[in-house]
Image (cartoon, rainbow, N blue to C red):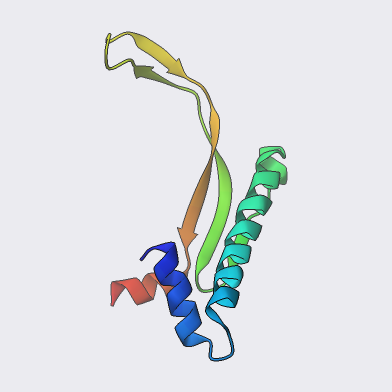
Length: 100
């Protein structure tokens, strides 16, 4: 499902919304999650919060440790620096819906 298809599904499910309003709802929800996680990524790891949607899952920021890698063109060993990555963990209800 693409973002456009998600907007269309929200439009069809919500009787009182125009298509433009459905797009604003989806865009706003996604932007709020991204902005919040962006702010959390700037905090120390132990102080970070996550976005938790009960039954669906949670979004959070984790640190990916520094590691060794190889340059595929030269075969030279390189150090890949630590970085922050977004992570999604599925909720129980979501997991059950997919497993059916």
